[in-house]
Amino acid sequence: FTLFNAHAEQIVIGSRELARLFAEFTDLDVRAKNIDRAEHAADKITHETIDLLHKTFITPLDRDDIHKLITTMDDILDLMEDVAEVIQLYDVTQVTSEAVELGRICVACCERVSTAVMKLSDMKNAKDILRIATEIDMLESDADRVMRSAISVLFRDENDFKRLLKLKAVYELLETITDKCEDVANILEGIVLENA
Image (cartoon, rainbow, N blue to C red; front, top):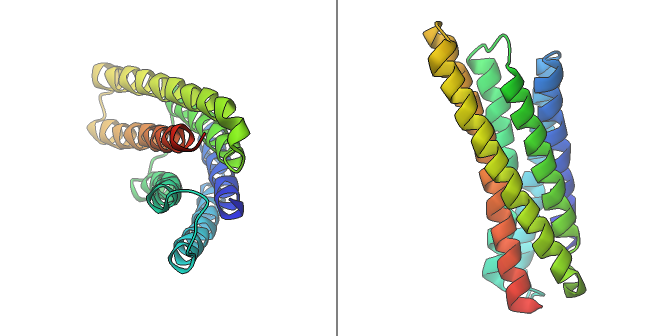
């Protein structure tokens, strides 16, 4: 549980850096390095968790659930790193209000993932975890709507085909972060329903 919590902290750190990248759109190298640092720290935690899983005879949760939870949490940070890389590799020079909004939704999802994960060590928190999982599902739906609307605006209004492709890729990656958060929420729901 300590490792889950430490990983969840890195997710929140990464998401806040990502949101700042879009909201301020300055110091892109610094933001990318900070996201990269959070991703590397989370990778170490993931490896440590999996290593411990192989060395431990009796685990507090089902082994598959532990493995699925930590690797899916790790996917969230991998996607954040992908977004920062795409911004640099595609030479994105300006962002839209929709990208800023998707960044904000990513933070909200990641903060809720962290809160739910930190409650996991005590099944007396089952109702709270299920409520938070529902909130994550709703945020993911919000991200879907924002992305669809943003892509619609792009195809309707953007005349620069390169810019259209760059922003479409950014929108889709940001929305995929919320999908992964929803995957974590689903895993947490499963754990709670099996163990509460």
